[in-house]
Length: 600
Image 1: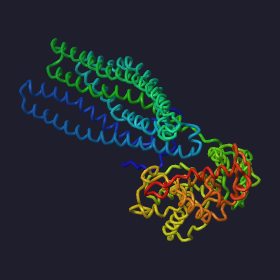
Image 2: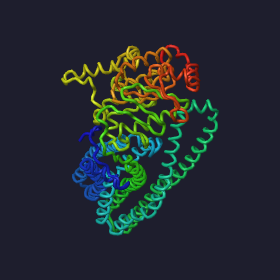
Image 3: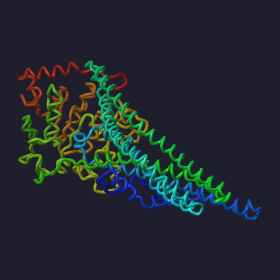
């Protein structure tokens, strides 16, 4: 039974941590059943060895019957060989059980994160998602050890108790009552561990989120002189997490110490009672040997039972965090009105921005965040009173909005893979979900699709002035790109993002600062090609670069998030001192390109 990392994981259980763990078992019950059978037989045969040894002593060694001794010895060798084979099968099966649980949890978490979309960041921190993906997934998969060795331990424990009945009822009662007593001692510690583990995971997610924020804004913090202050805050949070980790470790150490020490005391008691019975002549020498063997064999089941309790205690905490994430829901889409059938005006009443269809519109402001908020409202990523034609944007089904309006964020994620797939990733995803407008150049013949796809890629790369990136890479569009395109420069990443947005060919494209990392020459090339590529299509650019503003059909000058003046770039230069100062400052702030990189 193989593990398919790409199959549908099925609808996950969201009622609670224990329910989620049970769902993971049900989704692969044949494999879990096989693991339980292999583990049970393996542990029972461990206990069978002392039984065979007792027979060899009583029927072969003590009376001097070499035939019986050889027979029982051969049986022990055969059982040992079979048990070694079963041990391999048990380990392989349980490894597959853990891998399946790992992959299945990753898929349901990633799938749900995709369904949440833009609502993800507003409902849960990045650190929480990272903690689930890095730590909780591993903890959940490890807890499924209970379905293999855990079940086997229970079965083997019952079998050994039954075998002990044939030797001594008193010894059997001690064995059968031993584990319940261990549970009464260790059980409260398990509950305490769950509480400590939950608090530790919460602090860990907060610290992980802060690490991500620091990594993304370290240069800005350094420039503002706030690096030391943030470092002190991080040091304090890290110290509190460390202290909480010590508390978790303290409980865990007690569980492990008691898990090793108490079974030894319990098994020592069984051994002492067996020795007294042998000295009193109530059991034979062979039976005494079997008691010693049973005591040793019981070590595995008892150890697995304690480990099962420990892993389940940690696993249910991790599963509750996954369930809490899966319970998150995006804001309800209550749109019932149809989007305009023809290109129509986008209007944001909060700022006064009106976007005419088929025009290249620019938003110029000294505060980039104001322009970004307007783009988010026009793209329906935040609640607003924005309208599309005569219809409030909030009353249009979200699928229709996403199919025709694309917001190209300046720091949009770039996934790892061949460059051609990286550029086409957004296009492939949106088209697969039915959320992207059909390309005007889609071929009628499916056999022409690969050629058409390559031409579309090259066209988008040309419009973004990114052909030199492809030429510089060893395998062109087939060159592997790292996650977030870390093996490309900042200017190259920006042009790749722009090419990806252009490849989707949306009816309305809203882009924030698409050329901020480019040198003047490359920026001018992008401005000219972008205007030609989007001819007749509605495009909105948030920018203060005079090279882009000069190509715009309409420029809105924003002051404090509201339209202060509207016109062409040259008209505003002549009539608006504030706009003139803004554009002049931006032109003076242009830095030279880095050596060897025409686009920074």
